Structures are given as C-alpha cells and as structure tokens.
Image (cartoon, rainbow over all chains, first blue to last red; front, side, top):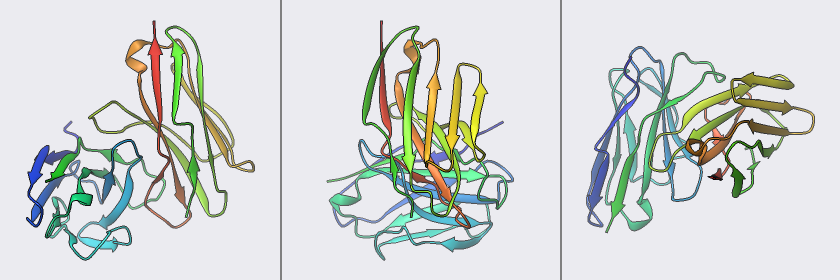
Length: 115
Length: 110
C-alpha cells in the first residue's frame, strides 16, 4: 500500500516568503506528526495531530509556523516570512492509532532551502 | 524531556558484526525505537523495545535495559547497503512525540 507522501520534495524560498508543505499520511492513520531535521541531526518534534485536533504544538519554533489538518487526513505545515534558519528537511509521520507506543511511519520529507 | 545519546560515527567491515549503543534518561520513559535513514531518504522503522531483553529480527537485533537507560542495535553479516544513519528514539509516558538522538552514521567498508 501507499506510504506517507510529501510535496514538494524540494523547495527554495527567498527570505521573507511564505511556504506551504503538504503531507498525505497513510490512509486511515489517526495520528500525524511533523518533525524538523537539520543537516547531520536527528529529527526534532514540531507538532502532533490526532484526527483533525492539534493536540501538541510545543515544538513549533515560532509563531511563524502553523500547521493544520482540517479533515483529519492531509496536513499542511505553513511557514510565514521564512528565515535562513528555517532551512531544514521537514518530515511528516503517521501512525495508526492514538497510542504513544505505535510505530510512526515517515514520509520522504521536504527539503527547504531559504536563500 | 528525554536526552538520547549515541555515537556520531562508526565504521565496520562488510560481513562483520557491529553494535550501536544508545543511552537515555530513564524518567518517564515509555519505549525505545530504532530507525534506519539513508542519506536523503525517510527514516524507516527497524525495531521497538518496551520490555527488557533482546528482540531479534533477521540480521538486526535490538536490546533494552530499562534500569540502566541503555539500548543497542546489533547488525550482523554487514552488507554495503547497511551504510546509513541509525537513529535511536524514545517516547515518554503520556507523550506521543519521538525524541531522537543525533544518529550514528555507519560506514560499511569492503
């Protein structure tokens, strides 16, 4: 079956531009996560949805970052007024239920470069 | 939160065995995952341990000691395609997010 997909795979933005990154989780998966991965580092948690409810956004680095999942499936991570420090790979993951022990399955990520 | 520590880099020979260690804070710990990540690709799930002991899955095994806050990933019969980063990640009690270590970059040489 289809895994987690993300688009675009690569995004180049000029500093100050807004960007929107899309995630299509595995069909039927309740939980959806966004992570940010800097070069040579492990992924860092940004935010978590259970269905359409955003239950945890403690990892969002600033109020320029906003995520939504209005119908409980596809999710969008939006970054306003991008800065150079936002350059990273943004990973989306989904898991089947709302259990904290569920395996999270990752998408290929969107590599964002801010010039 | 969790502090996850693992070596930055390791090198091993094709056909050999390698052990990648991971230590973490034990307070609030709920379970430990290992993921493999090839350069430019998504992390892929390898194993999950919540109880003490060894979980074996083909060439890969993972061990957990909850009292010591210690885990390792054991890779046997190394192949060139095993060259990748190996990420150790923990979950805290009542928390859904994964807290990752920085990853161990494994290079398999002929």
